[in-house]
Amino acid sequence: MALSAEAIVSLIGQHFALPGSSRLPVLLVAAAYRAAGARLGERAMPLLAHNAADVQTHAYGDLHVTLLNDEQIRTCYEMKMRRVTEHDLDHAMKKMATAPYLLDNYIFITTDAIDPHVQAYARRLYATTGVEFIVLDCISFLRHFLHLFYRLRVPFLDAYQELLLAEPESSVHHAVKEAFLAARLAAESSSRDEA
Image 1: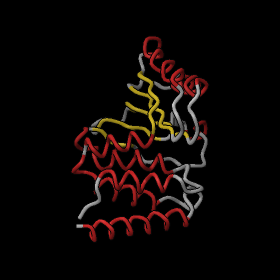
Image 2 (image 1 turned 180 degrees about the vertical axis):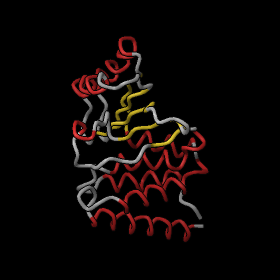
Image 3 (image 1 turned 90 degrees about the vertical axis):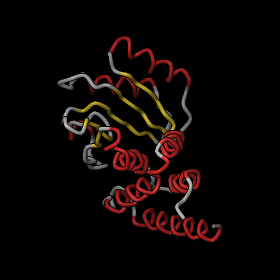
Image 4 (image 1 turned 60 degrees about the horizontal axis):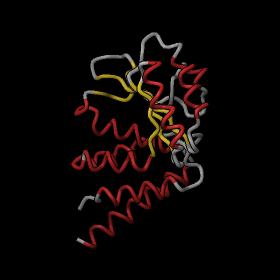
């Protein structure tokens, strides 16, 4: 029996609590697009190296999303394992100023609390930039995704695992990968036993 959406949220939440988990939110959002991209008409571009600066890679953020039939970046995600600040939003605008076209969305995903003043600042930027900025909580993003695309929860979890295992040791240590595999196996065994 497949894990419930809430069991997956719990599993991922435990995984994010491990030391050395800073790359995991990027993998989470990439896995969501891998699982649901065809239904959305969008795709996440291949991930760039975790240890390369945006200046070196000419990236606008951690994950770029395009339409399926287009190479133009439409949405940019930037993940933070800390609170997002107004400075982060200003820095994102500076990076976007070098883009040859206007993005639709610039989404910050954080694993920390969201400052209401920063959220309000993000909303105001649309009027001046034409780009919609938002700050989202990572686990809330995951919970909403899994309930919205309920039938894709297993493909999402498989995509997350595949992306996780494909990451080099410099991004995600072997122990973090092993911990996820063990926790997933335990959760799925427990789910089968309860069924």
